Length: 173
Image 1 (spheres, rainbow, N blue to C red):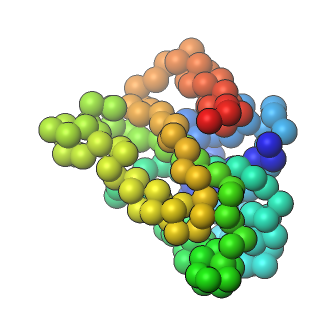
Image 2: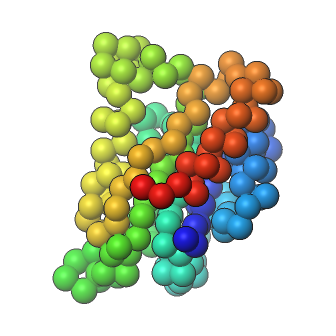
């Protein structure tokens, strides 16, 4: 299955976790698409992005969890690329049958993202807008991959998470 990983990290060189995940993915045959490298000015090439989406079956959004959502450029990308008549609407069927997978990193531990935890809501509740986007565009929403408590991981744990990430992306669901 041809897989596209759309990485939305505004400061990848400073991110030990996301950088490690991407470095591990670079050893596979997935397409890695770094939004902040490509569009530092925020001006998105919609035709290029739509063509890239069209040529892949599995789409992965990889990002650090910022204010219970993605970094701003991924939201801007969604607003510009997932257009009416292309991604949704009566004639918007370009993404039908594709798969959407989220790969999210958090500084806080998994326990913080549970009912009754520090953030009061589970990760599955907090990512509902992405699930709704998949539904609207005819995509199948796959189980999310998370690396939580990222700042507390040892090098060995981080390598294991990176290997698990590759397995998750390549899995049949």
